[in-house]
Length: 274
Image 1 (cartoon, rainbow, N blue to C red):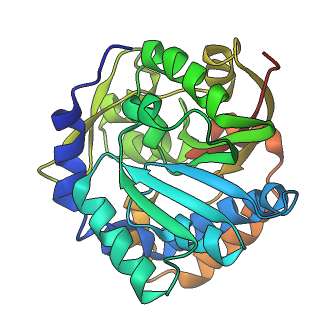
Image 2: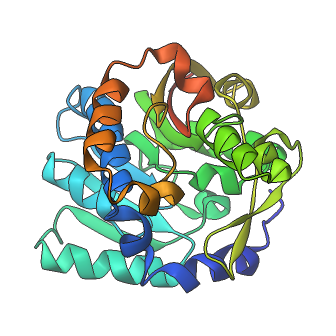
């Protein structure tokens, strides 16, 4: 498998590791979007006894901590050494060392894992898979299928190809290129901070499922952020808590068909039999 440029991916995430929770995880929009993910994810985690999880792009460990508290055993991996360091700190703080193992490992290096270790769930949250090109996704899917148990699931939270909030917001600002940036077929330099970008590909649920169709059946896609806005609008909503609460209530009633127009969607894939 051809390697991604590891340094070009790792460096941007190293640079935001210490501020990521402040800038996203603990923002009011970040918290609400993550709760929507957990609402859907709980349905799948609860179907397994002693659920074993391989987490990709674990970031600062919020999801690993939540999964462990649901009774899962988690191998939390990330390409960023500093993100993994933050995760390790949280594991110690929560006394979850027996439930969570942390490892610095990029998505492109999953073939290094012991193929005899099989998982009930492989999980990737909030756009980590958008850092992988279409060609690379197809090749990685082979490894993902190999690492899953026959009744396991691969679940990813992916940034969609169209987000009506984003298009409307940047159109009103007269920034038309940004308004339609997700339509690009090639990678775009998406900002993590004012000074840091990372190459990003956007996928509709249909496109994502098609790329992995040789190894996986696409079961379902759930909207994450159809009524809830993207996290970069958090400052605008800080003084509008009632509006955000109302949008969050509407989000709970959003039909699954809206996944294709949401900020993110959670896609659930079942491995095909070999």
